[in-house]
Structures are given as C-alpha cells and as structure tokens.
Image (cartoon, one colour):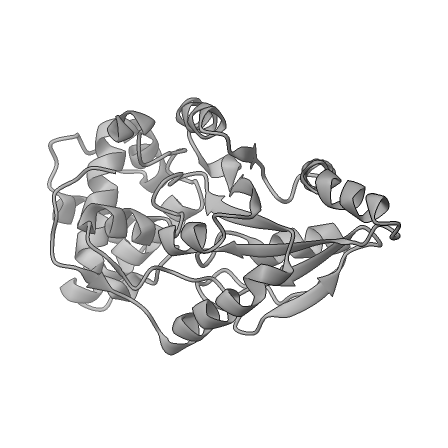
Length: 290
C-alpha cells in the first residue's frame, strides 16, 4: 500500500522471533499453508515474511471477521486476490458453514498429494496444513471449529498462542498451529495505526490519542449518525476529537479527572470500534495498489 513514510514502528517480541525460526524448520514438512488475515485490512494484515517463507507451497488465504468489514470493499479485494491466482475465502469463522467451506477448499488443494500417493502405491496420507497469520486473526478459532472442540486456547488479545501444536482434525487432515507473527517493523505508520485500530497489535505500541484520533477521523466522516447514536451525543464532522471524547466520557459517566476521562473514553471508543458497534469498515482500498 502506498503512503507517507514515517519512522519505523518496531514490535518484535522474543516469542515472535522464535516462532519465525520454528516456522522455517516446519515449512518443508507441510503440504499447504492456511493463511489467515483480517477482512478489515486485506493487505496490511498479511505478513510479507510469512508469504515469502511459504511461496513454494499451495496456499489457502482466509479473510476472517467478515461480519465486521465493509462488504463492497471486501468483494473488490477478493476479486483482486483471485485475479492473481490466490485460493481465497472470506468467512465468519463462527458461522455453521465455515468448517465445511474450509475443508472443501483444503481437500481441493490436497488432491495432487493424494494422487501422487496413489501412483506410488501408497495409502493416501493426511494433508498436512500449517495455519499461520499475524496475531488475533482467528487461528485458534479456526482450529477449534474444524476439530469441534477447544483444542487450542483462545483469547481476544494479540500473541496468546505461544507454542506450536500438531493437531489431528481427521484421517484426511492434520494441522500445525503457529503463534501469530508480526513483521519486525512497519515502515508505514498509517498501516500501523490501522492495525492498532482493529486490535491486531497492542494499543501500547502507539500513543492511545493517536489511535483514537485516527478512529474518530474515520467514524465522524463516514458514519457520523452511528457515532452520535451510540453515545447519545450531537457532534459534527468538524467537531474536535478531544471534544468528542469528553462528550463520550460524560455520556458513559466516567469520573476521575480530565486525563482519566479522555483515556477511558478513548479505550471505550476503540473497544466498540473493534467490535463493529460504530459501523463496518474495510480500512484500505485495493485501488491504492494500482
């Protein structure tokens, strides 16, 4: 994505560096890669290192959290990725149909492996798939849905899954679970802001006021009525962001001093934006790639 360059944003905890080293070891033992990305950031929620690492493997790209994305913009992204030869799905992983759609696509990608096994006189072996992506895109949820049980710990915060796990889904499929891995740094601060806005990287990576300003700039210009309705306030697209946060603070009964008012209001704003309570957004346009 094009954009003004800023200072690099570094975010690469030790467990992510270790995960990349482990991925390099395991990549040769899998047949396909299942890469998850967030439908709200169809470009920036993909780790270029992970893509390059598995460039010689068949890949299924799954955009998750489609229920929180702008459907018309997401459709353009799906068309784009299909046009460059990607196998791609867009899913709410909690939908009943999601596991079947994923398994159908995985089996299609694994046909060559099974045919090769048969030609060699072998019993077709399970397809081995590596599940990867940046933090908080739904890797554990996907595995849990495919297995039908809580096979991997799930929590709505980045980087929870720390250890790689081998998980047998069925006689036809085995998965290797991997921790979420971000690139060592982002040289485009706009992309970093958007990742923070949707909760993929911790809010602590950037100052909270920068994140809330970016969120308010978006919401008040594209979904002002929803903003006013949500917090029972009356603001315009020209209203200053600090004034909006103050009104949100008053509306939610936050007390504790002015600084606390703004901080707590900003945290509420981000939580509810991430949850789709202020509208549905896809935060980057495929046209920017052209």
